[in-house]
Image (cartoon, rainbow, N blue to C red; front, side):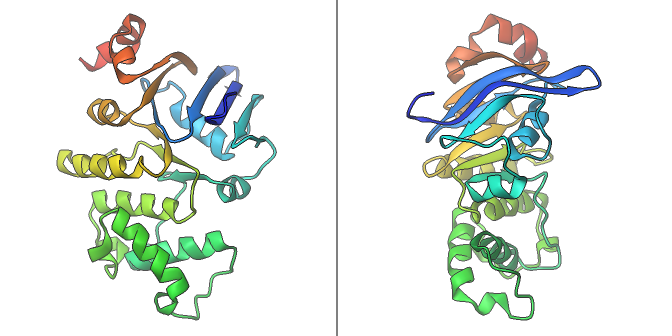
Length: 250
């Protein structure tokens, strides 16, 4: 482990009835980088994210985050120390406004109980940081809009905003472009280019154009194993990767 390694995964294993979903996996995410994980369906990408967040236990191996062994930490504790996952475990309150959703996330991370009887959008301790986050995600003009009225792409942006409200040291994004139009994907790529200046990000994504334009390093998973890790150019030119995965996309 080097001084710049934020997340260190060592010999991680997850079995399901004899099937190895994560097979002795080791990789690192460095401070300040956007590290993408790609691979065919069934490669174990989402299983890995669930292991990192504590949603499912690992059968073997070690995960160190910010110098701390997090094996025994709950999902909530992992979030509190700076591991924030967007999308699959993030629930948006559809009847609440965009601003209220982010305010509730700010409030939850601060450790206070929800004050539903108090109009949260009158509490500047919540609204000021929430509005800053909405500006980061390009949603400031939608602050008073009901979440249910947002487009699919805007809901994805809001889910990232909710994750940012937890003040993450590492942002885990599980297929953020899934189901998006090309236009919405391009807009989100622009946002992520800005976010990577301020946050370390672990990105799982099938959109190869997005991955290769965003990533500092890429790891390729096949059957739960990392068959290669390197820069986008390294991965593009890796014959094993081309045969195992990228060739399928051609």
